[in-house]
Length: 95
Length: 234
Image (cartoon, rainbow over all chains, first blue to last red; front, side, top):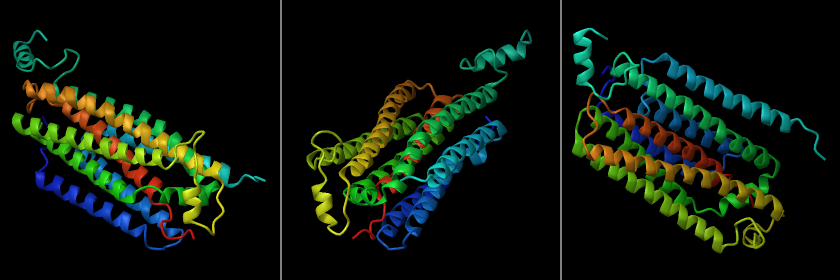
């Protein structure tokens, strides 16, 4: 098979990073950053999700371009849903 | 196909379906199919996330104060439990790739233990919410939350919306965990019988993709549900 057997050290490294980021995100929630709290929490969550997708789900190592196309289309669709949905509600004149 | 080496090649891998050229192509097709399924899962959860975001922006005070009634310790521990389970899954795929049957079986059992631990902790949290009358319905009551934030007048209906979304999202996530545990029980059975090796570990790979996806959903649920403005609301 062409799939790389990734060294286990790499998996432990990713795991440790995810653990540290989990503790960091919980701790930062208790620091008053105003509106930035939400931004920081979501940036950390997105970074964690990226690590899981790239390394645990082997997307970084796949030679199959279709897989990447499917993932990009999924993210694009999700952003379309969230951004257009929120833009609608944010600009509505609700009484 | 009539070629004798091709036939010999095929007999070598009885797991190769006849419509694929080789094991590699077969695995790539399966992996791509799994990603398409996960794409539909993203759409499925995406609708819930949008509903959550719209109401959170609309009823911010109720969402923030209700969020603070959740147990952040249990939420953090559960996040850590899930990340550990993702590690055992990733190492399990690696063990299968290298044909280490015993190691694979051990890692699958560890994954199942982490999965069940997550559901157990989630169950304790839900039971706490039940005791606190925070489950939407006729006995719903947030006087304790209002009492904790005397300077912020709260609308119980809006808080009920937060808890409706909380139970819908964590409930759907837990349902995915239960399905994942079912899938991993089957994988454990197959691994026990020695079905996997360097040439064939596709079920482990795509079962792992599912497990990691469910982990990612929780990676977003944790900050969105537990970590709203822990410091701000008076």
